[in-house]
Image (cartoon, rainbow, N blue to C red; front, side, top):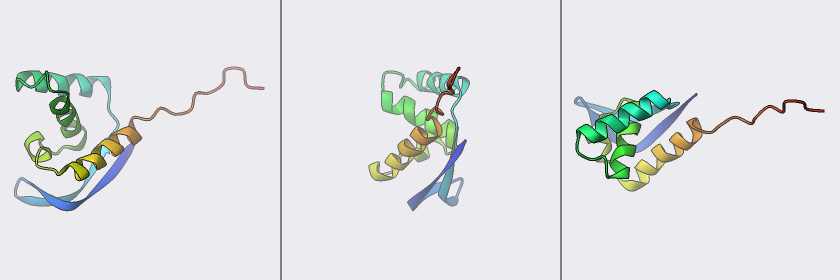
Length: 96
């Protein structure tokens, strides 16, 4: 599953304006890699930094660029993450 996020203010990524990003569904491997990046950056004790590394991996937007987002724009990424990470309803084994 993917979820599109549209920002009010464009981000500058590699010299280009980006207003829309796609949040991908996380896997354990992506979450593990994001935590490894936080550790390597010396920011493992900061839960927000670990989250930003994860969102960076899931959107393709660099960590340092995501850090420039105002809180209200960052909240859109959190909502997108909650959407793509939502479990589907379990199937009843012996539904009657």
